[in-house]
Length: 201
Length: 199
Image (cartoon, rainbow over all chains, first blue to last red; front, side, top):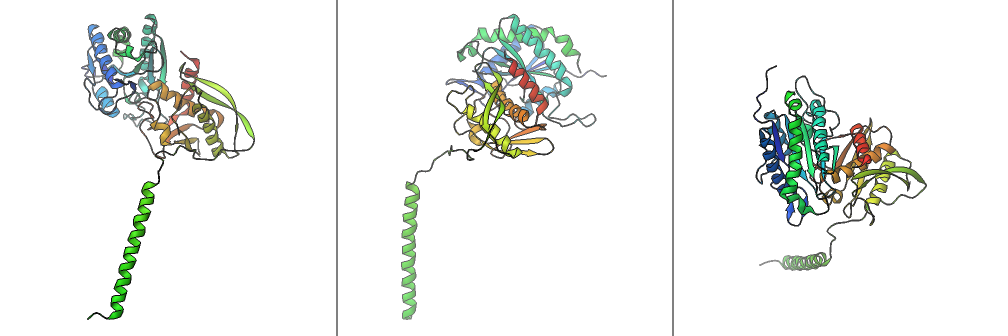
């Protein structure tokens, strides 16, 4: 098999942006702004571990979920990581795709809605590694599936990380220390599973 | 010279035009002064009376981020489709209560449930349900899983579920949970098991 041209090992996606604010976390804080900060922090953590990383949204731009999936798939990234922020709950939730019903592949053509199907075991391995790393750092964590686009449209490993404050104060989401605690755990887990993720075509 | 009867007809017509204009002006004033409710929050269907049945509802709890099986006694009609609708309305009444574990916005309701053979269910929510729903991956998936797992656990044979809002397809519930495709009940049941286990 001819190796695929891969410019970036990881694609980090700051979810929402532009007209899509995501959750209004407080009167002055929008989810789309927190996800950009988390994405920049995660890129720094990944690149410091020698992992070439593309941040899909590094400004307040409008990007559809289809465009996000197309960018990630076209780059043949080993892993796609979507970042979300939430005011409810505590700690971190790591999600893999909950695939919708049906839509069979046709020969070498993959169904767009279930493109993730073949890579789901790899995604779950990555999600479990991230969750284990969070636990090591005493961050409350859960690993779940979710009906969250574009996870189901990604052809490689794909996870989403939803970051909530550890207590009830949403302002912790903007604290650089907390952001780094979370993103360094994600980066360490991705670096630890690099061979497994990188070996998949 | 205009004939006399012609002049009389013109005068009568002019008087009629003036009279109708005055009446139209009067009706317009009444219409403007009558207040119209911007959002009708009344339930879309009358409450069901009759014998009650014990059912299992899968209720979302925001404090723990979990789904819990709870037994409830609710009146259910005999028709399969009407039963499914009342089942979800029973679940919704918990979410609209003051002491709810998972708050939905005022006026949230199920417009209807359609059971289409083989194994397909369509849940049609009203716009108040989706427009006032809180945003977030977990909070939205708790709602979706609660609805689908409750209907599939109490209505045998459902394999896939589609959620509409006001009879139309919608991209997401409130920015996260995907509503564009059919939900696979097997996958949702596995997610329900994950959500019941808690953090």
